[in-house]
Image (cartoon, rainbow, N blue to C red):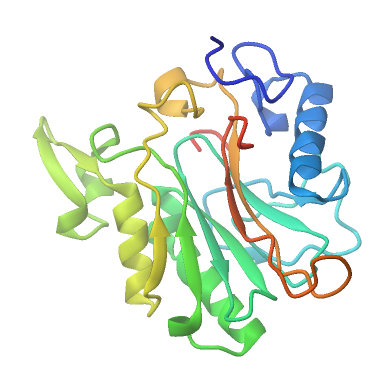
Length: 259
């Protein structure tokens, strides 16, 4: 059995459904993988919108000038759209993808929650922008937190650990701590007033057959993605949402350094 189930075309060490151009993988393989994801979810081949993630807080709204395919996308760490033909996403290899939807699903957002961005307020930036865009308070939003490096695998220094609530960290000696990134992300959402939260408990580091992990494999690894699209408003399936899709390198479908 391959290290990751064969849904994509990338070869080791990016096998198989690598969605990141910046990983050293053959760009034609990444393009083919992205097109397969779009096809599997019922979207046009170039519907995906990603960012060059820089562990910051800037949110962008994809427009007509967006590069397609996005070999050199704009820098940022959150996206927002109301365009039902688009899939917006966050590429990861340990960080947490945060997916958000307004009350009717017609406007959605996605945020890249590594420890730097989370501490800087990327989740707050995405929530605030989505609330303003859909005219709803945080309590009416729904959120999903995708697979990230788990609490038993994410070792950080005291300076990093000290940026997060005590219940998200525990000491392991030598000035090192284990940080629960997924739980810290959930707490950030709850502090903003969001109560409808679905958080994955899967660990990208431990589940090598399903997820890419920068901490586990180093720079020679791929990127999975968490994707979300607005509710479809017309045509076939009108009134139905294609939903929130947490994509991983698996047959059920599935990128900056370190996640």
